[in-house]
Image (cartoon, rainbow, N blue to C red):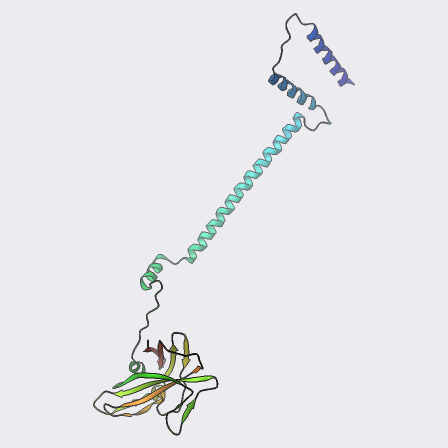
Length: 259
């Protein structure tokens, strides 16, 4: 009731001032000035209205909350930037560990050429076998189902296989008879065909088996020997490259036969 009486008195005062002026013309406000007075009056009234949630006090509280939210967003953004920075540093450190040193890179670049294969150092078959005074000369190969060196003994291929017979001549180039004892050296042979197929030599009791050969070779004469390998039938149609890996007393040597 008290508020209603105050409002009625203020209204009566305003009417009396308007009606009983001192003869001066009433001041006319512009639209901007009128809007400013209305805005201020509305907030002045709502300040004391408990049922109104948009008064000046609530506006001030909302401003504080907005400032707090802006501060929280700013802090969150700084944390994200710091986390991204730490992540990038950790990633760079890991990459540095995986990258070889400059010295190693230069050394590799000087020793290897892009797309080039490692160079293989081949030796003669005689050197690989450690022969002295006798030369070992590759004479060719043949693919057969069975190999017969004499009337009394024949080597047959296992089921599904065929024999790759490598022919090697042992030639005495000296002026006197030479003793040739390859059996005592206990060599092993592995054949690489066309750079893909790799097979071990069979051990046979053939008298002319290169790996077990023992005998005397007269001056200027030769002894015909063979190495026998078993390959799956049909896998070898032609040979463009053939390498023989010879191991004697744990030491390996490579001999190029074809290619």
